[in-house]
Image 1 (cartoon, rainbow, N blue to C red):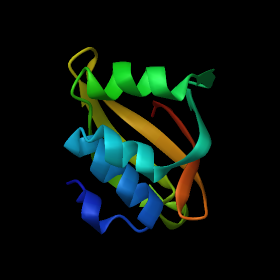
Image 2 (cartoon, one colour):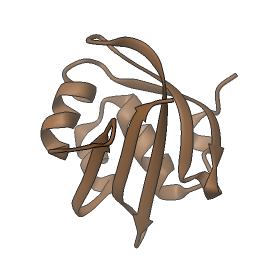
Image 3 (cartoon, helix red, strand yellow):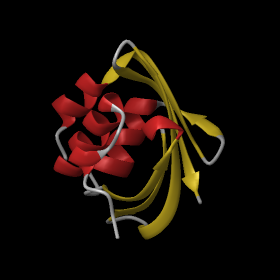
Image 4 (cartoon, rainbow, N blue to C red):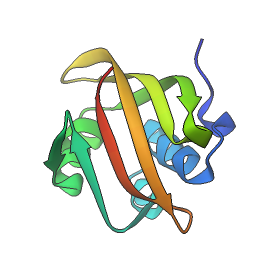
Length: 107
């Protein structure tokens, strides 16, 4: 059973997941702090290029299974047209109401 995006505990993470699932690039960028960074499978990536490839051009979608650390750590089934569905972990660093960094990878 998944947790609806609008029920996630942390407002910044909620905005991130909601924008991702809506394929809303403007809202996604608004959820990120200036200079935000990310890693995928423990390798830092260029966030803009990664988001274009893994989310927006491939219809990315996240079904959150559980949250911990005040809503800043998620386990989710992530799917897109490139890779299909896989169980993933997401860890967020938040400052001033925006996502400063997120780390994702297979769970």
